[in-house]
Amino acid sequence: TFVLVPLLLVYTAILYVYALKIGLAGTLPKGTLGSLVVGYLLAGAATLLLTYPIHDGGVLVRMFWRYWVWLTVLPVLLLFIAVYTRIAAYGLTEPRYAVVLIGVWALILAIWRMVRRSENFDLRVIPGLLAILLLAASFGPWGIVGASVRSQTIELAGILREKGMLADGKFVRPAKGSESPLGTSAARVRQIEYYLNTRHALRRLAPWFEGEQQNPFAQGKSPEVTVRELLE
Image 1 (spheres, rainbow, N blue to C red):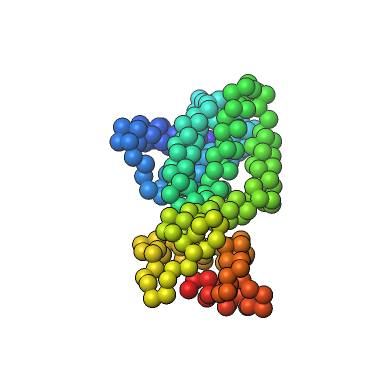
Image 2 (cartoon, rainbow, N blue to C red):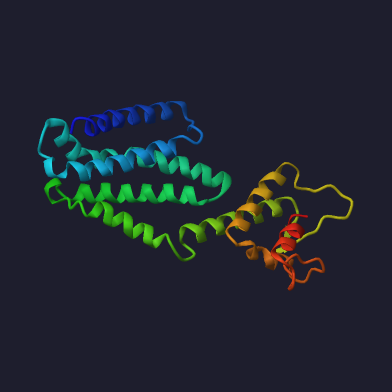
């Protein structure tokens, strides 16, 4: 009542001013907006739950209870724009997936709140909806790991195709003695390889090397040999 609600209302005003500044400048901050908005959304949801027994007490509490969920719409839209730019540049990863998930959760809550009056807003929707979204994201090709691995694989294929090292779904080995055509993209390729390796997903690349004499995924090769030959 005396700390969280006033601070969150002030922070809401700051976020709206920040959104105006971003709109006027036409550029997004690098790597900070996502964490700011996600922390704000989670803190606000926790405050809603904590203020429930006394949501009629005090002007600020009543204001927060009535308007806060609606006011999250603009920060959530900013969040989606910021995450989209990162995904477009570097592909989907688990942290970016989680940020999108939190944004979807907050947006659904805002829509739910808009169609329901405050006295009919069931607080069980807040943790219940988040639990459903987390459960849905925990398995399957659409899940946090499956979707991220697929996105990184697609990005790797795009880099190799652009450098002439992948054609018709098959790896094109550079001529012996020639420099790697990857150039400045080599570091990014190694990052994606490391990412796929730590998720035990390197086998997704196996079809690229089928029929090759020097196939890093040939039977009998240990995972260590596969990784080494793949990097080479």
